[in-house]
Amino acid sequence: MASNKQSRTWLITGVSSGFGRTMTEQLLEAGETVVGTVRSTAKVVDLIKSYPETFDCRILDVIDVAAVEEVVGRAFDVHGHVDVVVSNAGYGLFGAAEELSDDEVAKIIATNLAGPITLIRAVIPRLREQGGGRIIQISSYGGTVAYPGNSLYHATKWGIEGFCESVAQEVGGFGIGMTIVEPGGARTEFRYGSARVARLMPEYDGTPTHDFLKMLDPANGLAPGDPARMAARIIESVDIEPAPLRMVLGSQALAGSIAALEGRLAGFRAQTELAASTDFPAGE
Image (tube, rainbow, N blue to C red):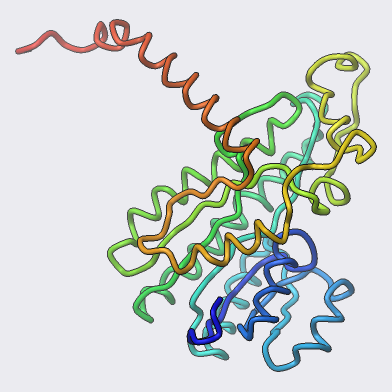
């Protein structure tokens, strides 16, 4: 952000790695204040030391509802005003639906879906009372496109996108903008470090369901997305009015999203007569 602009305060979940870490670094370097949450301070010790006045590090697991509400309340109470809330915490889980354990299913839903819902619900009253602000939900282009071997990840991303699109309409009149960010593949720990893989079954070997194993291996080529450029575009979006509802980051992600949506539209249009056949006749 330009140096002549007033400094903002950001609340960002999951700043130890990935987009959360990269955004936090860029914001702190620009003189912004960041309330950043982590589950452990081990990976952000350098930020704590380098920015003692502007980096407010908080321990948080977003599946803990009471803790989310406490961190949100403290952020607004201590800093007086939070301009931007970035719901970023989450992870990828790969495997066929039947390969996933009940615990794996419950954990990713709690982290990627219920956690962001809790965070957003907690910040809305505060943002409304202060007269506005911006909420940014980090999703994925997997929030509109689906691939085999990613069913539960897609379930959480499609779910949070529906929630955010509805909430955006609820809070727009209070000066609260909502943006859903849909990045494509990027060179972050999300793909090459934190991704979790189910206990794989040999029945799916050699099928498209296990193609994700190639994607997770850097030897097969790195993702095209630059985390620094993506983080910069997310930060810049805060200055766009009105808030863009969706931002797709990455040319491959955009091409895949457009192809999926065009295919879906073609399928809908082919059902015009079928849909109409279930209506009461005119006048009845």
